[in-house]
Structure formats: structure tokens, C-alpha cells
Image: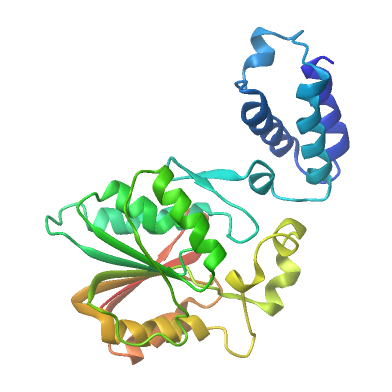
Length: 282
């Protein structure tokens, strides 16, 4: 079959679910992943024919896309800070706003010569910890998660990206004193309230791990409270705490930090103009 015919089938089958630009993006990702073809291939070879064997994974992926499964889970990987990360149903798919959080930390540490100790709480795929370790090779980076399966993926990602991370299984809700203090603690904890599910797409609700996303409407700051309490014991004097936050709860999250004695609490907007990040000093 002509590759251009398969592209037309993708458009026809998916047009009721996704914008044209997103369908094109899916198609190009898939032909690169399964066939090793670049996105401009149809420009230079418009009559390119692929075999039945080569067609099969594309049509299998199409079927999964029609069920609104994220393309990152279909191909099993994604990019974050220009690094390749394996992802599956045990890990969240890294978001652009999380890259912005990492950029904030990297900018703050750009002139820091010492060997900084960093801790990523709720590491998931390891995208935050691994990116920090990659771009701050002198740093000592640790990461914790409650999920053994997520930690297994994170370790694979660390190995693939050539960085050393100290991974630990830990429930932050019961964590106490650490073995040593950290200069930086960062976390993108669960923060989406149950009431916000109505705003979310099926591909998130049905496929991404609920435990990494949702919190009770009655206690939406559950994980922030636990991490702040942990930070009061394990963040070095003058150290910094960074959070990704719920865009609907910036002020109450900020107040939590102030109440616990943190200073220089700063909220920052993401590229879309929503308050999605917070930094505080101990």
C-alpha cells in the first residue's frame, strides 16, 4: 500500500477525535518509530509503497488511537528536555509545564559551583531527576516514588540517559527523617481534584495512573502538606523547595508554605499564563 494512502486513512478515521495537526503528528511519530522514516518522506517520495508487514503496526496503532490511548504509551516513549524517556501505564506522560519547572531550577543553579544535593519526590518516569542529573553533572540526585513499577521504569530511563540517580521506594505520606539534608527538593505530586475530572480528556482518565494524578476534593493539598513537613526536617538551611501546583489553588498553596515558616515564596506562571509553579526558601 502507498504510505500516503495510510496517512489518508489515519485522517479519515481520527478526524472526529483529534485536530488535523495532531493526527499528522501521530502519523509522523509512528512512521519514525516503526519504520525509521522521517516526517518529510512523503515530500521526497510521494509514491512510497510499504509492505504488509510494515503496515501492521501502523494499523494496530490506529486502532489504539481510536480508543484515545495516548500515542506516547503506544510507542512506549516520549521526549522531555531533549532526552528520551520510556513511559507506560505506570508512569505519567511528562508535560511541557514540568519542563518549565525544571528550567526554573536549572536557571537558579546555573552559577552554583558546589555539588548540590537534590531530591525529586514522586519521580514517576524519572523525568525531573534525570534531566537535572543530565544538565547538572556535578549534582548528587536522589528520587523517590511509592510505586515499584514506576521506579523500575525510572531506573531504565536513568541508565539509558547515562546518569546516576539514587532511587528509593518511599511513601512520602509516612516519610520522616532522611539520612542527610538536601539543598533542593522538587516535586510534581498528585494535585488534580476529583471535581476537575470533568475537564479532562478520556486519554488521561482511562490510561494514565490515577494514583499519580488525583486527590480528594476534601484535602487537595494532602501531598503538599506532607512534602512541606518532610522539607522542614530534611531541607538544608537556605535550601529551596520547588513544586508544580494546581492552577486553581496557587494562593492556598503559597499560604501553606508561609504558615510553615518558608520565606521568599514565589508563584510563577507557565507559558499559557496559569500559575503552575512555586518556589520557597527555608
